[in-house]
Length: 259
View 1 (cartoon, rainbow, N blue to C red):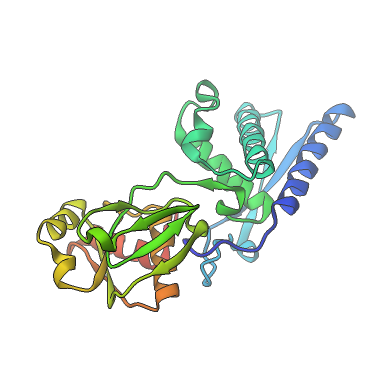
View 2 (cartoon, one colour):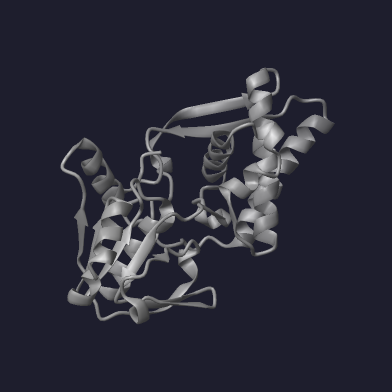
């Protein structure tokens, strides 16, 4: 699910958002109880190309949200609030994190997972990925080594200080002018191992790029790794613990997260 941003235009998404809200408003104005049909899937974002689409051809049914049920009414309320936030991001050509959206109405959302679920529902309704909505995760990954790039006008020069950690860019689609003389990419599971490699001046002795997601990698870290592999045509090796958690992290890098 960490692939490149697909070619869905913001204008098309804004039209779909207006269509959904207009339908709900018309139902209310005509005295009908509004309802929303949301496809359900076993897995999300399984597109092999990495474009982060949900598999709409593998729907296992529909969930119908209606106002008559209190839990559904709350989900509709949350969904419309998040949809408004997404609309504002798209109209302003801005990006925001899921955490930013949560803090718009913390007393209503109550917890982050409520916003996360609403964003998943919106992706299904609009047939798009979270990145198309201009909603990003707060990056936690780190990178160092033989690499130089520009993100949103800001220059990151890891080569000038090979063993100094730089944050993985959050807006991966805005990364450009990637320059590297590395021979491979080394992905490490733990931040402590990453720091040990930095202290040992590992990149001085090895022409490589080192990345860590500090445990389970977030979406920006996985997308940035894929971008480097594609643009630089470099092999990637992963250093994880030899236990179920380590292999789970390895498969998360390779295939994405089921969640």
